[in-house]
Each structure stands twice: as structure tokens, then as C-alpha cells.
Amino acid sequence: MKRFALLLVLLLAAGVAVTPALAGIADWPLPTLVAGKKTLHVYSVSGVGGGAGGLFGTYFSCTSTDTTTIQVGVEVFNYAGGCPSPPGCAPVNNAVATSLAVDPGETVLFAAGGGAAGIINVHSLLGDGGVVLGSARILSTSRKLVCSAFLADRLNVPPSMVYLTIVKKTTQKGQ
Image (cartoon, rainbow, N blue to C red; front, side, top):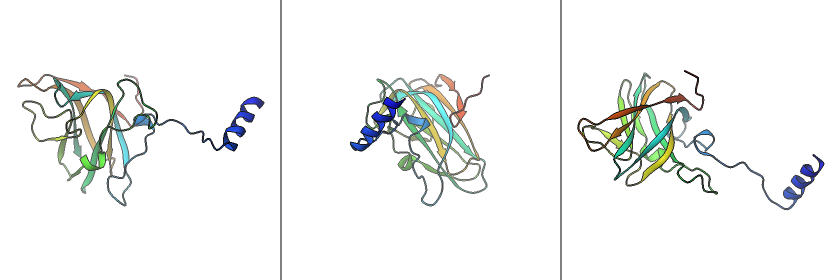
């Protein structure tokens, strides 16, 4: 223990900062969706994948249950090949730029990997980019939000789909 304390003092004295690595949805700093309003990490989704030219994409459907307009965004993280350091597992999209104002009762649909045949009114999160193996966090200025997520075949009508589990923030309860 004394050796560890001595090493820590020497590192600090040498000007080396000891900071934890940022690792994606659990601890990457939240962006400010709307100036003056707190951004909340409402839900997390694992298994996000899809690319602009790929066979499938990930879709996030969210409905506001609030009585006022809220801002909703999805921040996507790509883990294929691990997290480069620095900056760690940084988001691959700008959640502020791709966020939407959602009126009471309104539903919006975000897509990681572009639109699919037969799925309309999709708001793209990644432009021409893609995600190989990732996760996402759904952000909002209100907790009064109901969301679902699914992977869908982008080429066939109707598309084949599979549901992705959504968890509250970073806590998943056993089923």
C-alpha cells in the first residue's frame, strides 16, 4: 500500500494526471440538447448496428407523454475493435445536431444506418457513416418519454424486424 501511495504522489508531482477512461454510454459526458435545460439519459440500447450501405439498420421510435414540447436525441457509440484511447468510446454522431423537438403525443423515428424500404419519416443519425457493433443512449429534456428500438432489414418490403431490449439508463433487471 505504501508503494502505491508513493507512486501516486510521484505521478502527481510529475504532473501526470490520473483520470479514468471514458467508456461510452455509462460515463461519456451528456451533451446539452437545449441551452438552459438539463439533458437526461433516459434509456440505453445494446446491439446497435447498421450502415448506410448495409443490409440492416437500427431504429429508435420515441413518443412524448409530456404536456409540453421536449427535445429528444439519440447518441450512438461504436465498439467494433474496442475503444481507441484517447478519447475512449466517443459518440459517433452529434446528438445535439440530430435531436428533434417533439410535441405532446408526437412520435419520432431515428435511424442508425439510413432508412429501410417501407419505413417512412426516418430521421438519420449517422449520415453516410455506420455502426458495426455498438450501443446507444436515448437522451431527452424530459423523462416523460416512451421508446422502442428494433433492427430492420433495409431491402425488403415489408422489412423483417427484431426487437432490441431497452433499459432504463444503465440498469437492466432480470426477466
